[in-house]
Length: 130
Image 1 (cartoon, helix red, strand yellow):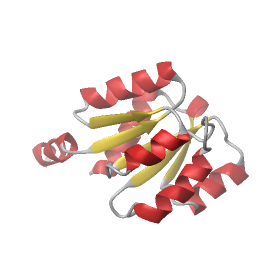
Image 2 (image 1 turned 90 degrees about the horizontal axis):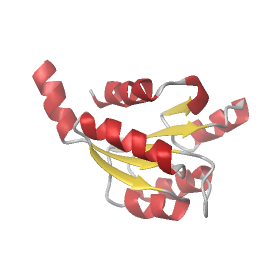
Image 3 (image 1 turned 60 degrees about the horizontal axis):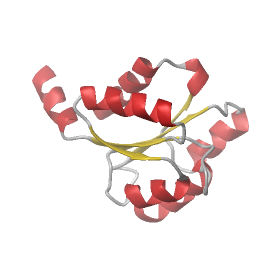
């Protein structure tokens, strides 16, 4: 089973949408270590364009330049299959209304950055991969 899980993860693609260059670099490095194919985007428009490459997962910040994460989620609904691409919001916005809005727009989970370590974020995505 472990070998099958590892083999499956090797072929997984994740899009990390984060405007903070340091945090994005750390996340990309961690996911590459876990054998994910990793794409990065730093603003809402780039997030929409790169999602057309059909990643298995999208880690999406809400506070982004050009388009908010909520606007990006609305765009994703037009062309992404939620059965094939799981979207996890990773944001500093932790208000109940923001979380509810993100889930209603199609996110499978909502992580508040300040409440979770980087390694735990990676583990969370990996748990959804199996």
